[in-house]
Image (cartoon, rainbow, N blue to C red; front, top):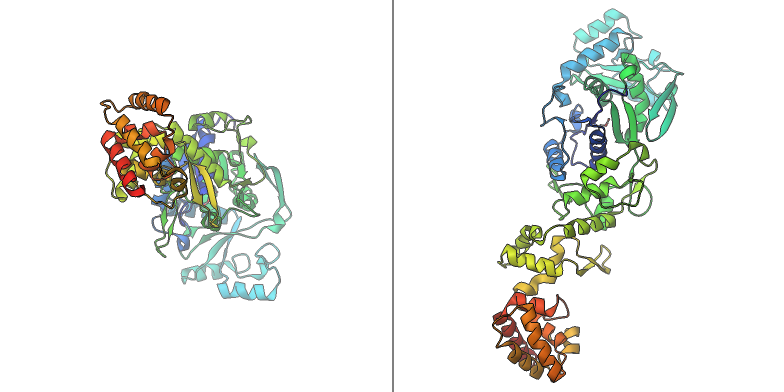
Length: 518
Ligand code: GLU
């Protein structure tokens, strides 16, 4: 087994947008595959037609494209084990259902929904299993001719797995160790439905993992209860020698309080739980996505990778390659990982700061244009460099005023308007009241006279002239000058700002301030 090529799969059901927990599952599969020079398969598990949502498959593919997670084969990628969409594998599953029936490991059941309901009424905790199956309408209790007649007459049926009671089932899990379950607690799961000629999740999942030569099943903890049944299915087919190893990942937990992370937590605290914005085709409702909220894919990857695993040292900022290098499935935590979305914001800040200012400009430019401002990438990049390490104030979901570092390109906008548009002066502004005194107009006139003769309006040239004037006059013009150029107590270094605005605009704003503020 050890010399077999590692093959893992990510196998979502297209029932809606991909949850961020699913993204982490796919990421761990990716890291494990790359670490072991193996292959990652993308399979679509769409055998439950009642839960199919149009657009979900395309959404999932687009999400991974954005995140930079590449599959080696699967839906949209090709490969030698296709088709990779389960709805296109009907005939394959039929053959394996037949095999179980012929071997007496499964049976045909005709019980109507109302008959099953009646049983449930009659018996507390009714379960279709070894203790009850002989009192039901199935191929174990009906004569063979009767079974054939019912099928020929077009009666609908299901195929159920015949689970032998009293067997200890071992699930070996790389993260959880040995999990043991007695088969008596399991029910005779439906494997196939004649109504749509499709297998259920359990059968299709096992058959495909086998045929696609999957060596490791890495998936969310919510699938752990299915694992004993899956082990029994492998045995029933005689595939125990090639049974994949299991690794069930712990849950992502709410940022505060108990329980698993839900979309409601995101709505309440203001963070997305989906990689991309999702437009629900049925309700028209729009759910926020990391991409549209201004997160960088590298930041999302880095953040998710460390939810439930760590490299064993104190590294936090890690590239995808470094994550691959350090990844170890055995070091994944058994207990749930709290979804610390603030940490996600921190990662975004770190990754933004690693970028060149020019890389911020497409998004900044779009925001400026939406506010009626035209500029150039070069000038926008200068603004980014002046403002990217500033702190912004914002209101949290409960209306509390808070501060944090600029962590998204959009955070720049409230801090950068004055670079492009002359301020309106507000005499009541606290900073203005404090710094614009009676004598200020006179000081500003002198500063204008100092700057007026300069041909070179660079930081150095302005600084030399202004320093000399400050030296002889003893004036302290900085805060009032800030009022004139910004309108309030924000912004970068004054010389950098005036150099950016240029001589004409700088002097115009100063004259205007004198006129308005007196
Ligand atoms: N189709 C299942 C899902 O939606 C796959 C579970 C598994 O990986 O076995 O997550």
